[in-house]
Image 1 (tube, each protein chain N blue to C red):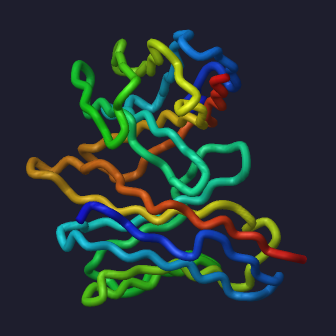
Image 2: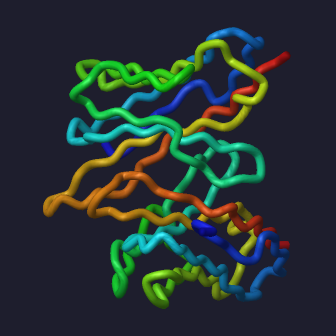
Amino acid sequence: QQQVKQSPQSLIVQKGGISIINCAYENTAFDYFPWYQQFPGKGPALLIAIRPDVSEKKEGRFTISFNKSAKQFSLHIMDSQPGDSATYFCAATIQLYGGSQGNLIFGKGTKLSVKP
Amino acid sequence: NAGVTQTPKFQVLKTGQSMTLQCAQDMNHNSMYWYRQDPGMGLRLIYYSASEGTTDKGEVPNGYNVSRLNKREFSLRLESAAPSQTSVYFCASSDRLTSYEQYFGPGTRLTVT
C-alpha cells in the first residue's frame, strides 16, 4: 500500500514532442505528490509538485495532472527539448500527526531521452 | 551556501572492508536521509534522522549503520562491505516541520569488488 508505481521505465521523444510519465498509488492518505528530475551524475532535484485538492498544476512546459478517483498522477512535458533528457521520479508522502512531513515514497524512475 | 555535500565522490572497496560516507548540509534542516540508487530500483531509503539525536531505519537498512553527529552532519557506515552494496548513495536533507522538499547531495558512487 506504500508503493508508487511508475511507467514507462524509459521513454524516447522527438524534440518538440510531448513526454508523458505516469504514476499510480494505493494509499489514499498520501497528500503531496512531487516530481524530481535527475541529470546524469547529479542528485535529484524537485521539479514540480501537487496536492490532491487540485487536478492540474502547470509550471512553464511542465504540467502535473492528478486524478484522485483513479489514484493516478502524471507529468507532461510540452515541447520537449534535448535539455530535458534526464531521469524523472514521481513520489508521494503524507503529513504526519503533529504536522511534520513523512518520508517520500519514490517510484522507480523514468529515463527520458529527447532526440534532436 | 553549498547545500548538501557528500564525500567521497567515488570509492572502490574490497569485500569485507569498512568505510564511512560523510554528509553535511548548511541549510539548518532538521531532517537528513540516506538513499541508495540502483538501476531499475529507483531511490530506496536506507536510514533517516527526523531530528538531531534520532535515527530510524528505512526500507533497506541491513548492512548499514548511521550517526547523526550534529544538526549539520549525518554519516553512513558500511561495517563489512558486500558486492550487493555496490550502488550510488545519496544524502538528502529537509525541514520536515515546514516543507516537503528534500535537497539532495551529488552522490557517492561505491563499487565493492
